Amino acid sequence: MVPHTLQVHAGIASPLLHHEVPREQHSVWSSHYDEGRLTHRSARTITLAHWADQALQQYHHIEALSGISFYTPCGTLNLSASSDGFSYTKQRYLIESALNFRYVDYSAEQLAHTYPMLSRSLPYHGLYDAPPSGMIHPRRMVAAQLACAAHHGAIHHDDVVTRITPHHDFVTVETALGHEYKTQRVIVAAGAYSGLSSLLPRSLDYTIKSEIVTLGEISSDTATFLSNMPTMMIDCQNNIIEDAYLTPPLRYPDGKRYIKLGSNSVDDVFFDSATALRQWILHGDTHRTHHAQIALLRSLFDQLDWISFRSLPCVITRTPHGLPFIERLHPRLTAVVGCNGSLAKSGYIVGTIAVDTMAAGCDAPVGQ
Image (cartoon, rainbow, N blue to C red):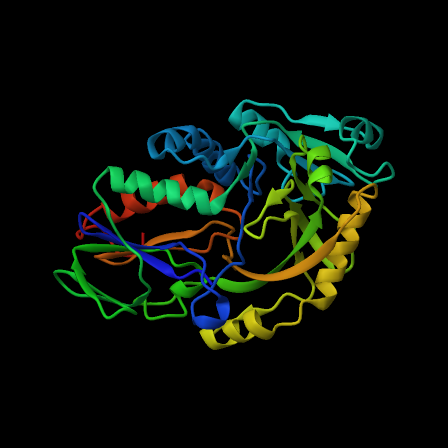
Protein backbone atom coordinates (compact mmCIF):
# COMPACT_ATOMS: atom_id res chain seq x y z
CA MET A 1 0.00 0.00 0.00
CA VAL A 2 1.26 3.45 -0.82
CA PRO A 3 -0.51 6.24 1.09
CA HIS A 4 -0.77 9.82 -0.13
CA THR A 5 1.90 12.10 1.29
CA LEU A 6 0.99 15.69 2.10
CA GLN A 7 3.60 18.18 1.01
CA VAL A 8 3.00 21.76 2.10
CA HIS A 9 5.04 24.67 0.79
CA ALA A 10 4.21 28.31 0.07
CA GLY A 11 0.49 27.59 0.07
CA ILE A 12 0.75 24.42 -2.05
CA ALA A 13 -0.52 21.05 -0.82
CA SER A 14 -0.04 18.02 -3.05
CA PRO A 15 -0.47 14.30 -2.20
CA LEU A 16 2.40 12.14 -3.49
CA LEU A 17 3.12 8.43 -3.46
CA HIS A 18 5.64 7.51 -0.78
CA HIS A 19 6.59 4.68 1.57
CA GLU A 20 5.51 1.05 1.51
CA VAL A 21 2.89 -0.18 3.97
CA PRO A 22 1.41 -3.72 3.95
CA ARG A 23 -1.69 -3.47 1.81
CA GLU A 24 -3.82 -5.39 4.32
CA GLN A 25 -3.38 -2.60 6.88
CA HIS A 26 -4.80 0.40 5.09
CA SER A 27 -7.62 1.44 2.77
CA VAL A 28 -5.35 3.48 0.46
CA TRP A 29 -3.16 1.47 -1.89
CA SER A 30 -2.04 1.81 -5.48
CA SER A 31 1.03 -0.27 -6.27
CA HIS A 32 3.12 -3.27 -5.40
CA TYR A 33 6.67 -2.59 -4.21
CA ASP A 34 8.04 -1.24 -7.47
CA GLU A 35 11.78 -1.14 -8.12
CA GLY A 36 11.73 -0.18 -11.80
CA ARG A 37 9.64 1.52 -14.46
CA LEU A 38 10.30 2.24 -18.11
CA THR A 39 11.26 5.65 -19.40
CA HIS A 40 11.34 6.21 -23.16
CA ARG A 41 10.41 8.53 -26.01
CA SER A 42 8.01 6.12 -27.71
CA ALA A 43 4.45 7.30 -27.17
CA ARG A 44 0.93 7.15 -28.53
CA THR A 45 0.86 10.92 -29.14
CA ILE A 46 3.43 13.55 -30.06
CA THR A 47 2.52 15.52 -26.93
CA LEU A 48 3.42 12.59 -24.67
CA ALA A 49 6.65 12.03 -26.61
CA HIS A 50 7.61 15.67 -26.05
CA TRP A 51 6.83 15.41 -22.34
CA ALA A 52 8.96 12.29 -21.99
CA ASP A 53 11.87 13.86 -23.87
CA GLN A 54 11.76 17.00 -21.73
CA ALA A 55 11.59 14.95 -18.51
CA LEU A 56 14.51 12.74 -19.57
CA GLN A 57 16.64 15.86 -19.90
CA GLN A 58 15.98 16.74 -16.25
CA TYR A 59 16.91 13.44 -14.58
CA HIS A 60 20.62 14.14 -14.11
CA HIS A 61 19.86 17.60 -12.71
CA ILE A 62 17.43 16.13 -10.16
CA GLU A 63 19.96 13.44 -9.23
CA ALA A 64 22.71 16.03 -8.77
CA LEU A 65 20.58 18.40 -6.68
CA SER A 66 19.17 15.63 -4.47
CA GLY A 67 22.23 13.39 -4.24
CA ILE A 68 19.97 10.41 -5.03
CA SER A 69 20.53 8.22 -8.10
CA PHE A 70 17.37 6.83 -9.72
CA TYR A 71 17.99 6.71 -13.48
CA THR A 72 19.53 3.98 -15.66
CA PRO A 73 19.90 4.98 -19.36
CA CYS A 74 19.86 1.40 -20.70
CA GLY A 75 17.65 2.08 -23.76
CA THR A 76 14.26 0.61 -24.61
CA LEU A 77 13.64 -2.15 -27.16
CA ASN A 78 10.20 -2.35 -28.80
CA LEU A 79 9.25 -5.81 -30.07
CA SER A 80 6.36 -6.21 -32.50
CA ALA A 81 5.30 -8.13 -35.57
CA SER A 82 4.97 -4.74 -37.30
CA SER A 83 6.03 -1.33 -36.02
CA ASP A 84 2.97 0.14 -37.76
CA GLY A 85 0.69 -2.08 -35.69
CA PHE A 86 2.15 -1.35 -32.24
CA SER A 87 0.49 1.64 -30.58
CA TYR A 88 3.73 2.91 -29.05
CA THR A 89 5.65 2.95 -32.35
CA LYS A 90 2.86 3.67 -34.82
CA GLN A 91 3.94 7.32 -34.98
CA ARG A 92 7.68 6.62 -35.09
CA TYR A 93 8.44 8.91 -38.03
CA LEU A 94 6.57 11.85 -36.52
CA ILE A 95 8.31 11.26 -33.19
CA GLU A 96 11.73 10.97 -34.84
CA SER A 97 11.16 14.24 -36.69
CA ALA A 98 9.76 16.08 -33.67
CA LEU A 99 12.51 14.98 -31.27
CA ASN A 100 15.38 14.82 -33.77
CA PHE A 101 16.55 11.26 -33.20
CA ARG A 102 16.37 7.94 -35.03
CA TYR A 103 15.26 4.52 -33.86
CA VAL A 104 17.44 1.54 -34.72
CA ASP A 105 15.63 -1.17 -36.72
CA TYR A 106 16.35 -4.87 -36.20
CA SER A 107 15.08 -7.77 -38.24
CA ALA A 108 14.15 -10.98 -36.42
CA GLU A 109 17.58 -12.39 -37.32
CA GLN A 110 19.44 -9.29 -36.16
CA LEU A 111 17.61 -9.32 -32.82
CA ALA A 112 19.07 -12.66 -31.82
CA HIS A 113 22.59 -11.51 -32.74
CA THR A 114 22.35 -8.11 -31.01
CA TYR A 115 20.52 -9.32 -27.92
CA PRO A 116 21.85 -12.79 -27.09
CA MET A 117 19.60 -13.06 -24.04
CA LEU A 118 16.54 -13.27 -26.34
CA SER A 119 15.17 -16.47 -27.84
CA ARG A 120 16.22 -17.09 -31.42
CA SER A 121 12.82 -17.85 -32.88
CA LEU A 122 10.80 -14.81 -31.83
CA PRO A 123 8.07 -13.61 -34.25
CA TYR A 124 9.13 -9.99 -33.78
CA HIS A 125 11.07 -7.19 -35.35
CA GLY A 126 12.86 -4.75 -33.08
CA LEU A 127 12.80 -0.98 -32.84
CA TYR A 128 15.42 0.32 -30.42
CA ASP A 129 15.05 3.65 -28.62
CA ALA A 130 18.63 4.29 -27.47
CA PRO A 131 19.64 6.19 -24.31
CA PRO A 132 18.56 8.54 -22.82
CA SER A 133 15.62 6.08 -22.78
CA GLY A 134 15.90 3.34 -20.21
CA MET A 135 14.62 2.87 -16.66
CA ILE A 136 13.80 4.83 -13.53
CA HIS A 137 13.64 3.54 -9.97
CA PRO A 138 10.36 5.17 -8.91
CA ARG A 139 10.80 5.11 -5.14
CA ARG A 140 14.24 6.64 -5.41
CA MET A 141 12.88 9.18 -7.88
CA VAL A 142 10.16 10.24 -5.42
CA ALA A 143 12.79 10.51 -2.69
CA ALA A 144 14.92 12.65 -5.01
CA GLN A 145 11.97 14.89 -5.85
CA LEU A 146 11.13 15.33 -2.15
CA ALA A 147 14.78 16.17 -1.44
CA CYS A 148 14.74 18.81 -4.20
CA ALA A 149 11.51 20.23 -2.79
CA ALA A 150 13.07 20.42 0.68
CA HIS A 151 16.11 22.12 -0.85
CA HIS A 152 13.77 24.86 -2.05
CA GLY A 153 12.06 25.19 1.33
CA ALA A 154 9.23 22.64 1.20
CA ILE A 155 8.03 20.95 4.36
CA HIS A 156 7.22 17.26 3.97
CA HIS A 157 4.43 15.70 6.07
CA ASP A 158 4.19 11.91 5.83
CA ASP A 159 0.44 11.45 6.32
CA VAL A 160 -2.71 10.35 4.51
CA VAL A 161 -5.00 13.10 3.20
CA THR A 162 -8.63 12.21 3.95
CA ARG A 163 -10.54 15.35 2.95
CA ILE A 164 -9.92 18.58 1.06
CA THR A 165 -12.44 21.42 1.35
CA PRO A 166 -11.99 24.55 -0.80
CA HIS A 167 -13.36 27.79 0.62
CA HIS A 168 -13.55 31.29 -0.80
CA ASP A 169 -10.28 32.48 0.76
CA PHE A 170 -8.43 29.26 1.64
CA VAL A 171 -8.42 25.45 1.46
CA THR A 172 -8.72 23.06 4.40
CA VAL A 173 -6.78 19.79 4.24
CA GLU A 174 -7.57 17.07 6.81
CA THR A 175 -5.43 13.98 7.41
CA ALA A 176 -5.70 10.51 8.92
CA LEU A 177 -3.47 11.50 11.84
CA GLY A 178 -5.98 14.18 12.80
CA HIS A 179 -4.10 17.19 11.50
CA GLU A 180 -5.77 20.08 9.73
CA TYR A 181 -3.90 22.42 7.43
CA LYS A 182 -5.10 25.68 5.93
CA THR A 183 -3.46 26.78 2.71
CA GLN A 184 -4.11 29.15 -0.15
CA ARG A 185 -4.11 26.66 -3.02
CA VAL A 186 -3.93 22.89 -3.51
CA ILE A 187 -2.79 20.45 -6.18
CA VAL A 188 -4.42 17.01 -5.89
CA ALA A 189 -2.42 14.20 -7.51
CA ALA A 190 -3.59 11.05 -5.72
CA GLY A 191 -3.99 8.72 -8.69
CA ALA A 192 -7.02 6.42 -8.60
CA TYR A 193 -7.98 7.74 -5.18
CA SER A 194 -8.37 11.33 -6.39
CA GLY A 195 -11.98 10.58 -7.32
CA LEU A 196 -12.66 7.78 -4.83
CA SER A 197 -12.00 9.88 -1.74
CA SER A 198 -13.22 13.26 -0.55
CA LEU A 199 -10.46 15.10 -2.39
CA LEU A 200 -12.13 16.65 -5.47
CA PRO A 201 -15.07 19.07 -5.57
CA ARG A 202 -16.44 17.37 -8.70
CA SER A 203 -15.78 14.24 -10.74
CA LEU A 204 -13.57 13.88 -13.82
CA ASP A 205 -14.08 11.49 -16.74
CA TYR A 206 -11.41 8.88 -16.02
CA THR A 207 -11.54 5.15 -15.39
CA ILE A 208 -9.66 3.03 -12.86
CA LYS A 209 -8.28 -0.26 -14.18
CA SER A 210 -6.61 -3.25 -12.58
CA GLU A 211 -3.09 -4.13 -13.64
CA ILE A 212 -1.16 -7.32 -12.91
CA VAL A 213 2.60 -7.76 -12.92
CA THR A 214 4.70 -10.88 -12.66
CA LEU A 215 8.12 -10.97 -11.01
CA GLY A 216 10.36 -13.66 -12.48
CA GLU A 217 13.13 -14.60 -10.07
CA ILE A 218 16.59 -15.37 -11.48
CA SER A 219 20.00 -16.10 -9.98
CA SER A 220 22.76 -13.54 -9.51
CA ASP A 221 24.75 -15.28 -12.27
CA THR A 222 21.82 -14.96 -14.66
CA ALA A 223 21.43 -11.31 -13.69
CA THR A 224 25.08 -10.78 -14.58
CA PHE A 225 24.47 -12.42 -17.99
CA LEU A 226 21.62 -9.92 -18.50
CA SER A 227 23.62 -6.89 -17.37
CA ASN A 228 23.37 -5.18 -20.78
CA MET A 229 19.65 -5.80 -21.19
CA PRO A 230 17.42 -2.85 -22.16
CA THR A 231 13.91 -2.28 -20.94
CA MET A 232 11.38 -3.72 -23.38
CA MET A 233 7.86 -3.18 -24.68
CA ILE A 234 6.22 -6.13 -26.44
CA ASP A 235 3.29 -6.18 -28.83
CA CYS A 236 2.64 -9.75 -27.77
CA GLN A 237 0.53 -12.06 -29.93
CA ASN A 238 -1.69 -13.50 -27.23
CA ASN A 239 -5.43 -13.93 -26.63
CA ILE A 240 -5.12 -13.07 -22.93
CA ILE A 241 -2.53 -10.29 -22.57
CA GLU A 242 -1.36 -7.39 -24.74
CA ASP A 243 0.94 -4.36 -24.63
CA ALA A 244 3.46 -6.00 -22.30
CA TYR A 245 6.49 -4.28 -20.81
CA LEU A 246 9.43 -5.49 -18.76
CA THR A 247 12.49 -4.31 -16.87
CA PRO A 248 16.01 -5.73 -16.68
CA PRO A 249 16.79 -7.71 -13.53
CA LEU A 250 16.49 -5.67 -10.35
CA ARG A 251 17.43 -6.46 -6.79
CA TYR A 252 14.41 -6.21 -4.47
CA PRO A 253 14.42 -5.68 -0.67
CA ASP A 254 14.25 -9.45 -0.09
CA GLY A 255 17.73 -9.67 -1.67
CA LYS A 256 16.45 -11.58 -4.70
CA ARG A 257 16.68 -10.50 -8.34
CA TYR A 258 13.58 -10.26 -10.48
CA ILE A 259 12.59 -9.33 -14.01
CA LYS A 260 9.28 -7.44 -13.82
CA LEU A 261 6.72 -7.94 -16.59
CA GLY A 262 3.33 -6.25 -16.74
CA SER A 263 0.59 -6.04 -19.36
CA ASN A 264 -3.01 -5.32 -20.16
CA SER A 265 -5.32 -8.32 -19.95
CA VAL A 266 -8.75 -9.43 -21.12
CA ASP A 267 -9.41 -10.12 -17.43
CA ASP A 268 -8.73 -6.54 -16.33
CA VAL A 269 -11.34 -5.13 -13.95
CA PHE A 270 -12.63 -1.55 -13.72
CA PHE A 271 -13.56 0.10 -10.41
CA ASP A 272 -16.00 2.81 -9.36
CA SER A 273 -15.55 2.67 -5.59
CA ALA A 274 -12.73 2.42 -3.07
CA THR A 275 -14.39 -0.68 -1.61
CA ALA A 276 -14.37 -2.51 -4.95
CA LEU A 277 -10.76 -1.53 -5.57
CA ARG A 278 -9.67 -2.72 -2.12
CA GLN A 279 -11.55 -5.99 -2.57
CA TRP A 280 -9.70 -6.69 -5.82
CA ILE A 281 -6.31 -5.70 -4.38
CA LEU A 282 -6.76 -8.14 -1.50
CA HIS A 283 -8.65 -10.99 -3.18
CA GLY A 284 -8.73 -10.41 -6.97
CA ASP A 285 -8.18 -13.31 -9.35
CA THR A 286 -4.83 -12.92 -11.14
CA HIS A 287 -4.42 -16.58 -12.13
CA ARG A 288 -5.01 -16.54 -15.89
CA THR A 289 -3.11 -13.30 -16.53
CA HIS A 290 -0.22 -14.43 -14.32
CA HIS A 291 0.21 -17.67 -16.27
CA ALA A 292 0.02 -15.86 -19.61
CA GLN A 293 2.75 -13.50 -18.39
CA ILE A 294 4.91 -16.41 -17.28
CA ALA A 295 4.48 -18.00 -20.71
CA LEU A 296 5.56 -14.75 -22.37
CA LEU A 297 8.67 -14.52 -20.18
CA ARG A 298 9.61 -18.09 -21.01
CA SER A 299 9.10 -17.51 -24.73
CA LEU A 300 11.20 -14.33 -24.73
CA PHE A 301 14.08 -15.84 -22.74
CA ASP A 302 14.17 -19.58 -23.45
CA GLN A 303 17.79 -19.87 -22.26
CA LEU A 304 17.13 -18.67 -18.73
CA ASP A 305 16.71 -20.84 -15.66
CA TRP A 306 13.82 -19.34 -13.74
CA ILE A 307 13.74 -19.88 -9.98
CA SER A 308 10.20 -18.73 -9.19
CA PHE A 309 7.36 -16.44 -10.29
CA ARG A 310 5.19 -14.08 -8.25
CA SER A 311 2.02 -12.28 -9.25
CA LEU A 312 1.29 -8.83 -7.82
CA PRO A 313 -1.69 -6.46 -8.20
CA CYS A 314 -1.51 -2.85 -9.33
CA VAL A 315 -3.93 -0.17 -10.54
CA ILE A 316 -3.77 2.51 -13.23
CA THR A 317 -6.01 5.35 -14.39
CA ARG A 318 -7.13 6.04 -17.97
CA THR A 319 -8.68 9.03 -19.73
CA PRO A 320 -10.72 9.06 -22.98
CA HIS A 321 -8.13 11.21 -24.80
CA GLY A 322 -4.98 9.49 -23.54
CA LEU A 323 -3.68 12.62 -21.80
CA PRO A 324 -3.98 13.38 -18.09
CA PHE A 325 -6.48 15.85 -16.74
CA ILE A 326 -4.53 18.84 -15.42
CA GLU A 327 -7.45 21.03 -14.56
CA ARG A 328 -8.59 23.70 -12.13
CA LEU A 329 -11.77 22.36 -10.52
CA HIS A 330 -12.06 25.29 -8.14
CA PRO A 331 -10.31 28.67 -8.05
CA ARG A 332 -8.06 27.24 -5.33
CA LEU A 333 -7.83 23.56 -6.35
CA THR A 334 -6.07 21.97 -9.34
CA ALA A 335 -6.35 18.23 -10.08
CA VAL A 336 -3.86 16.00 -11.87
CA VAL A 337 -5.38 12.61 -12.64
CA GLY A 338 -5.42 10.03 -15.40
CA CYS A 339 -1.81 9.22 -16.25
CA ASN A 340 -2.79 6.19 -18.36
CA GLY A 341 -0.20 3.92 -16.79
CA SER A 342 2.76 5.61 -18.47
CA LEU A 343 3.56 9.02 -16.98
CA ALA A 344 5.72 8.29 -13.94
CA LYS A 345 8.66 9.02 -16.24
CA SER A 346 7.26 12.44 -17.16
CA GLY A 347 6.39 13.56 -13.64
CA TYR A 348 8.68 16.59 -13.83
CA ILE A 349 6.80 18.01 -16.82
CA VAL A 350 3.34 17.05 -15.57
CA GLY A 351 4.15 18.72 -12.26
CA THR A 352 5.42 21.84 -14.00
CA ILE A 353 2.19 22.12 -16.02
CA ALA A 354 0.14 21.58 -12.85
CA VAL A 355 1.98 24.33 -10.98
CA ASP A 356 1.60 26.70 -13.93
CA THR A 357 -2.13 25.88 -14.02
CA MET A 358 -2.50 26.51 -10.32
CA ALA A 359 -0.41 29.69 -10.47
CA ALA A 360 -2.75 31.16 -13.09
CA GLY A 361 -4.50 32.66 -10.10
CA CYS A 362 -7.94 32.62 -8.60
CA ASP A 363 -9.24 34.98 -11.30
CA ALA A 364 -8.50 32.54 -14.17
CA PRO A 365 -11.51 30.55 -15.49
CA VAL A 366 -12.23 27.28 -13.67
CA GLY A 367 -12.14 24.20 -15.93
CA GLN A 368 -8.93 25.02 -17.81
